[in-house]
Image (tube, rainbow, N blue to C red; front, side, top):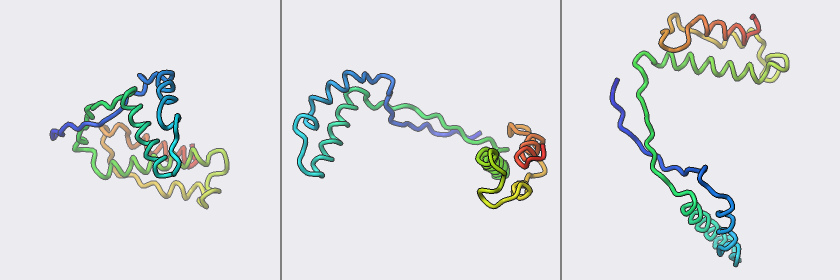
Length: 143
């Protein structure tokens, strides 16, 4: 598997925010004490005040984001099967409380015809072909 270079993301740890301290500092700022008169300076004051308060109470930290290259067997065909399955699952969840197909003009059999499965899905994909077929049949109302 090819090595992937590490990347970093700047994040704030929102769990360390003390709301009482933040509120106490906020009521003492220029934004609250003497708010600007016009819209542009009001926006700039709002932006700078909140950024300064956030930097004080929840400073930005660099966190390493671990990325990993996809396995060689996880190709475009596997990705498309997974995407199609997830799309059909979302459609099923959205429509199952009513008659399937009424919202988008598709009959249950049309839902099934939108699913195309490859002849061979590697077991390392995490989902075997039989599971994909079963999911499709459940979505189509056969099972």
